[in-house]
Length: 150
Image (cartoon, rainbow, N blue to C red; front, side, top):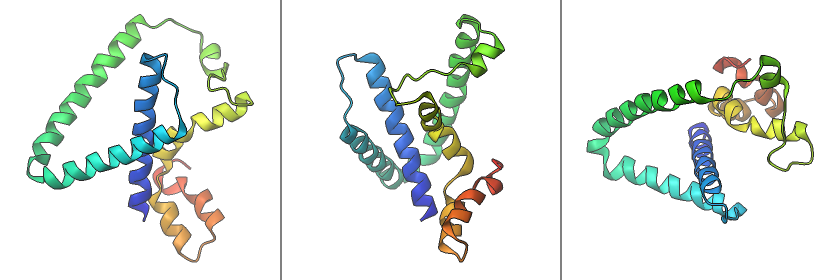
C-alpha cells in the first residue's frame, strides 16, 4: 500500500508538471480539475505498459534516461546560473508571491510545498505506521524522521 501511495504521488507530480508546461506554453489553455486526473491515469498506464511490455529493454532504457537526466541537469543549471537576474539573499528568501490565486499568501506557500515535502518524507513509512497499533496522527507526525526530514 505504501508503494502504491508513493507511485501515485509521483504520477500526480509528473502530471502537474506536464499541465504546468502546457499552461506556460499555451495561453488559451484553460485547466480543469479532471485534466489532472486524466494525466495521472495516462502516466500510470504508460508506466505499466513500459514495465511489462518492454521489460527486456528496460536496463538499456534506464541507462539512456540516466544519461539524459545528468546531461539535462547541466544543460538547465548552467544557463540559469549564467543568465538569470541577480537578487539579494533577503529578497530571494523573504519575498513571497501568491501567483496561484489562493486566498492568502501563507496558504499559497504551504500548498507550494506539496512536491518537496512529499519527496522528502515519503509515504511508505506513514502507511505502515498507520496500519500498526500507532495512532494515525502520530504516524503522520513521525513520518519525516526516518527519511531525514525530521
